[in-house]
Amino acid sequence: YEQIGDILSETSASVRSLNKKIPHTLLSNNELLHKKRAEVQSGKTGYTKNAGGCMITALKTGEVIVVLGSDNRAGDTQKLIQQITNN
Image 1 (cartoon, rainbow, N blue to C red):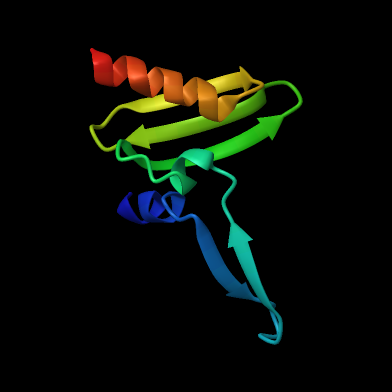
Image 2 (cartoon, rainbow, N blue to C red):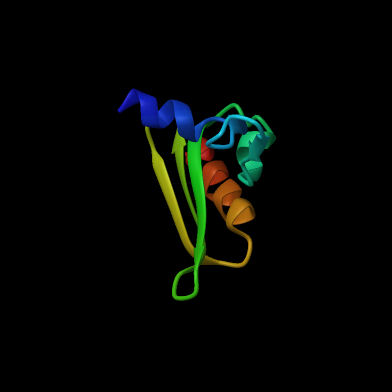
């Protein structure tokens, strides 16, 4: 699903209202994409009351990291990336 990966790797997107008159800029709140970490291919952040802060991150090496129930999802993901790259 290359198209999904392409979408999830974007840090921003420009869209217009249904009547095409009002432009909007959408910004990703995925810190790892904004930092342009070399290892990170794409990712998706989220939050639910039950799961807390969540992040799924796909690395260019093929690994997928899932963090749930985090108060610092980007920091926790960075720690896991470091463990993967050190091993």
